[in-house]
Length: 202
Image 1 (cartoon, rainbow, N blue to C red):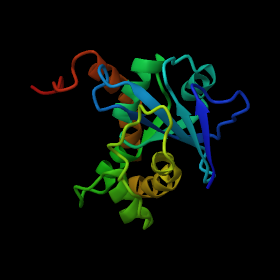
Image 2 (cartoon, helix red, strand yellow):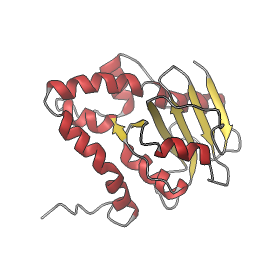
Image 3 (cartoon, rainbow, N blue to C red):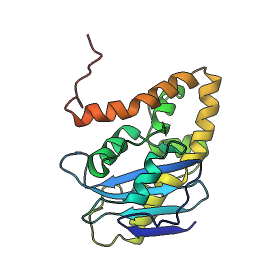
Image 4 (cartoon, one colour):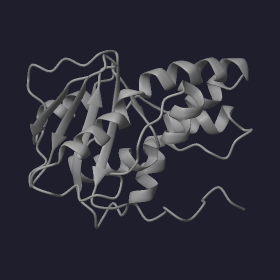
């Protein structure tokens, strides 16, 4: 595994695959209060690309990848990340795939749908979440932080492959796609004041 670190944007030479794994790290879980600090990406080749933000969010090369209609972006809990990318980069990330939603639609026998549980149960891979609550706004990320961030994207392609099989087996592939297609609107609702209110409720 190789980890490539960049400040503020991907290099112009970066070429995404047809499916790219994406994750974000922020100072917290409040889209309005807690700034975006890091975006991790992987082409599914065992390598991770980390884009760290200190002040500006211009990032034209990164934005081009995130909005490319020919590139599927794989997230775990896309609802949070897509809203964060909209809030700070001003881009609508699409098309996308969410392993958490796919897990909830297929693994109805379990209430464990976190990334760590999925990697262990579906892939037999143990990942550490020890750095989850560390200071992502630090000027320089530690090696432990970088490895943690990389692990959040390195297994998403493999998870998607297995979850796709389960979605087909359970006859829920089209339902999953409908959910994925709705996620940008769900993220926009979060940013517009409907994060806690269920507008579909009677």
